[in-house]
Each structure stands twice: as structure tokens, then as C-alpha cells.
Amino acid sequence: METKTTAFSVLKENEVQFLQSLLAKGGPDEEEYELFLDFISQVDEQGAQEIREAIKPILNEETMIGFAFTKPYGYAGDFKIIDMIYAQKTNEDPRYTKWDKWYHAQHAAKAVRNRKDFFKQVLAELDEGADHPKEVLVLGSGPATDVFEYLTDHPDSGLRFDLIDLDQRAIDHAKEKNAKFLDRLNFIRMNVLRFQTHKFYDLIWSAGLFDYFKEKHFIYLLKKYMAFIKDGAEMIIGNFSDENPSTGGMHTILEWHLNQRSPEELVHYAVEAGAEEKNVFVDKEPLGVNLFLRVKKPANPFKNPESFISWLTINNN
Ligand SMILES: C[S@@+](CC[C@H](N)C(=O)[O-])C[C@H]1O[C@@H](n2cnc3c(N)ncnc32)[C@H](O)[C@@H]1O
Figure (cartoon, rainbow, N blue to C red):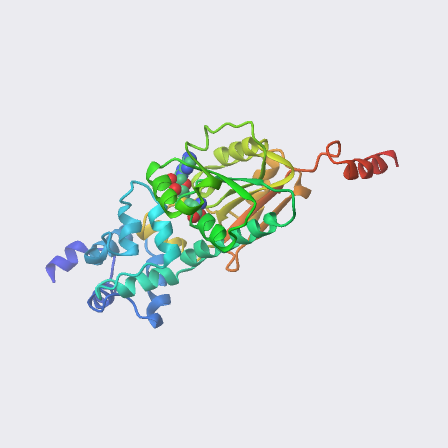
């Protein structure tokens, strides 16, 4: 009893007991999901520390929560955890199972899975038509599970991918996963801040990366990469919404910090990067948790005879 008072100064005794009851049965049951989320979302840093202390036995790499908190690769959002979210990896050890199920049921995890589907849909639309091959650049490609699934479903795809990631372990993992498709993939180990190219892409995609950049770097990168897309092509940047219901748990308990943003902020960044507002659109996956800033580079009327004629007509009237 004395130990409890010393270790827990912010959490009330019934709250500590609640956490201990969850530990005893291997995690929350479905009907307790909301209660547990609300509880961890309203605590301050001291409260978060105490929650972590109370659930210490599961705060290790065996669970999704523990993996996210301990960050065995040295940073939040590594290729491994993203791939485990995609696969809904659930530890079958009864001490951990329900914790993992809770994790995968959270909006943030669902939004990560939804963004993979969103990207595959974008790729399918780009793949239509005859003017192949088309070039796609992926920034912060991580496990490249999205690309793997797309190419598995579309073996005759006319898309070619350049994939940039800073982490060699992510690239090794992605190469192994995509072993069948290496003839169409070019992995580049580099910081996206440093990458340079003379190529022009049909699409530049990035998800799970710009959320880690401050405004200044976000705008800098958007401006930089807009120069690498073809006229009429798009750059799409995923960014978690500032209305993400999983924020409390992510930021305080898991220490997984993102720069979550509103659609208005994203549009503002695009305009700051030099885009015209009429060419900027904010899309989202079904939950509205992962937003996608879509910036289109206007078609150059001088390169395309048809639009050149309409450009002439408009400008002569
Ligand atoms: C959260 S993961 C997202 C992976 C993938 N885009 C997805 O949605 O499945 C972010 C990836 O970006 C990489 N990364 C982080 N900072 C980077 C940087 N400055 N330049 C290149 N890659 C970076 C990480 O190594 C990690 O693999």
C-alpha cells in the first residue's frame, strides 16, 4: 500500500486498480476500449509516467504499445511498427493479446491502414491509360508494403518507383518484401532534405513523414519537390489531422509526437510553397484522421498542343 502511494502521486487508487485489473486479464475488453482511451487521454506528463509504471509488465517489444514506446529502432514510426500495424500483428501470448487488439482498434492505427488503401487507389488511377512507363517518387518509403500490395494486384502495371528512405534497415526490409518487383523499383538511401534529381515524376507521394517536420521544413520540401514533377502531375503529402482522437494516448503515453495539422494549415503551407490555391486540395481517408495535401502542378500550355490552343483562346479574349 505504501509503495502504491509513493509510485503513484497523480493517479487515484481506483485508477491504479483499473490498470492492474487490465494487466491481470491481458488488456482491455472491447467494452472498455473507450474508457481506457479516455483515461489515458486526459492525464498530464506525470500521470502518463505513472500509467507507464503501472503497465510496465507489457511495456516491452512484445506488445504494440511497448514497441511504440520503447522505439527499438531509435525513432518513432519506424518501418517495423508501420508494417506491424498493416499486418495487425497480435501477440498470441495471453498476457499481451488484448493490448494489441486494443492498439489496432484505435483510430490512428486504422488511419495508417486506410492510407495504404488510399495510396493504392491513387496508383491505380495513375496506371490507367497508355503513356507508360510512369514514374513515381516515394518519400520516406518505410516497408513499401503499399507498393508491394499494389504490384501484387497489378503485375502488369506500367509504374516505376524511386523510393527514398533514410534508414538502411527500412530499405533492406522493403527490398526483401518486394523481391519479385525489384526490376521496377529503385531504392535510394538518403535524407529527403538532400535528394536531388534531373528526373520529372508523374506522382510524388509521401505518407508518415511530413508529420515529423516543422512548418519551415514542410514548406521547404514541398517547394523543392514540386520542381521534380511533370506539368499537370501531382504531389500528395499525408499528414495526420489535428482532430485525431488517438492524440492523447500517442503523445503522452507512447511519446509518439506528430505535428498534426488542419486542412487550412496544409493549404496555407502549399500556398507558402508557391502553389496557387486553385491547384491545392485536401483529401482524407474514410476516418478523416490522415489528411492528404494534394498539389497539382499546372499543365504547361506550350508542351501540350490541345491545351496550348485553349490557352491561346482564353488569352486572346
Ligand atoms: C512512418 S514511416 C512511413 C512509411 C511509409 N511511407 C508508409 O506510409 O507505410 C516513415 C519512414 O520515413 C523514413 N524517414 C524519416 N525521416 C526521413 C528523412 N528525413 N529522409 C528520408 N526518410 C526518412 C523513416 O526511416 C521511415 O521508414
